[in-house]
Image (cartoon, rainbow, N blue to C red; front, side, top):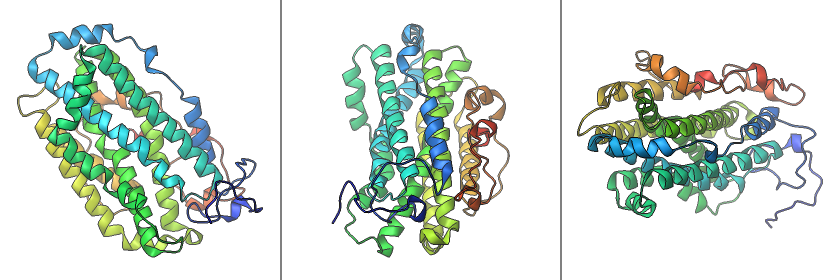
Length: 356
């Protein structure tokens, strides 16, 4: 029988990340994978509020923008609002299956920060537009955004509908593919809109908005690292019970990345259908998406193709590497996170390579 508190004494270091014993005490004195508790602490240090950033100039900037610029800015803001609404409710779908205390702490903190992001978009909308309700209602009417919503929520919805037992192979497959979907949302789907926000700011427009997006992007880099670690552990650690599942799902995971790349290229084309903005155009964004998706696939051990270098690395670096988000190194053996092997040195480790 399911319970919110397991009264049985269970060694937390003996349990897998998912589908083990139901969690009991929220204890943080010993860990199987210390990296997740380190990520919990790092995210906690990042707390911020959008009210810290002034948007009065953004309101006047928006009034002076061309119709094409207004379309690009507004479309991206609406798209971001949808995506964070999805991920804010998507992360908790994993909690039902979590059996590791430090991962639970990490996911709960992650969920809270996604709520900050969603509130931040409301803060921007209320400060820039005369009728915020019209903007929110338009999100549901926008066929391009809703098409991407359908793709983004598919695996969460499938996981929520699962009724199989803990040992079910189908449940494990769906759980693994949901993690891939979360990784893609954090790793790929936000970035066209991020880049556009930073391009406007480079042209001295909507700088307050870009400062908020910079903080959101900093959080998302941490969330991305979180999903990468979960996926790599499941791929490599036999006692997690997902090694075979990951191998069987590899082709489907690659196809999911390819579909996301296509959708984001289509989004870029949709944004720039009536013209570009200074320093950014449709073709450059297409090249960026190709580079981004291949680097993200490489980071979680999926097959990838070599591409040309990041075409916008120069001018975006100050925006993308915001305050050098510090976490663990990307290249390592997963066993380094096992019991008694915690480096506990996030301050010395750079997430910059995940930032673009």
